[in-house]
Length: 519
Image (cartoon, rainbow, N blue to C red):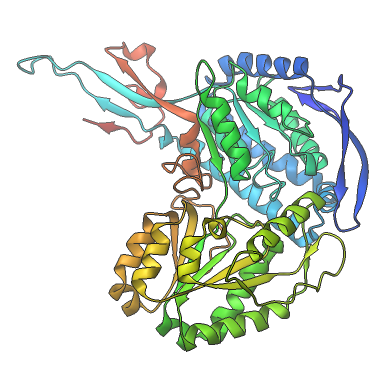
């Protein structure tokens, strides 16, 4: 393994002159390994290889791809402590978080392998011919999903494993039959290189074509821009900021052949707390939300950044207990000085807005890059009038809004941007009596949590991790769960084809023994 170089298919290259290092935010110092950024020529080579690989890879069977994806999981596990140590050095996150995220990554890979082994995900639909139908004969039509082509995946800053090199975007695209080129995140390029090596080893062991996977280093935006603009790239996966995701969406739309960008972006994940449940379990919800707000230094896309409730003694008591619980929690190290500095800047902008009250001690920073959780409060009317306060402050920062009435609360929800999640803290009777609040939330989010916290995204068939823009660029799809595969395929129909020429999923005798919808 040659750390610091680009993986272009099965070849290591480092022909460029631009280099960079990663950073240990906990020790506040640069790491030792030097990474070489991919050149334009290397990018072209990676895309050309992926295009050639697609002609072979798209025709591999689901079972062959399942073996490949399971082999990726095995190779990642084989990295053992080497991967965990690299992860911790590049993120400042603890070993337990590294192992937990590795486990999630393995589970995601295995979930897609299981999906492939079963096979029905192609949505085979058969309209049998009826030549006797009048006034016009009915022709034989058979439909299934087929892969789009080479996919570019951008690694996420806050999940170096589960949303990066072998994360959900890569796993789902490979499962669909699409080669993947990863634009590695510069904050954890070493972690990305180790995982890229695991993927390439798995590809070789299972006989996958050279170019089915590449991993390109980059410290800036140029490599990503060239990849998205490349005419042979057919789709993009991204997890990150609204600014970054929107830039990629615009770039892809300007191409002669526009392509889909599936970006999961910013979210403040509103929480609505109704008084009966809040009064009954004040201490429980204060502790639960203090933990959710501060988890991972607030660097989760589902961090609860906005809490709405009716003005009054119940919400005041909750607020006091929440602040008390927050004070018990030590500051956490953020992922990188750049993320910490942006958090501080955005927090300062938010806290400078008229009428906003800071409720927590802002002077308890323990060391560089450590961020104390911050709780602030404002009146509902002032919040409604100030769109700056509707924007995400990425980190452990939560704004409490005191609403004058349920009508005002509903107006606030209606005027929010699209979000990934919302949470409703209420008794069942309260929820039934305030169903207009549920409907307002449903119109703004992809997932609604009842009496829980938004942090924690289960990987399963029923999960939706997406939402109206700008939570994601296409609310019809999820970035988490096996349905994420639908982003990388398109429907295709065969009309009046001989059975011998049809894909196995559409053959009359159903040799794959999968679910076929016959009409």
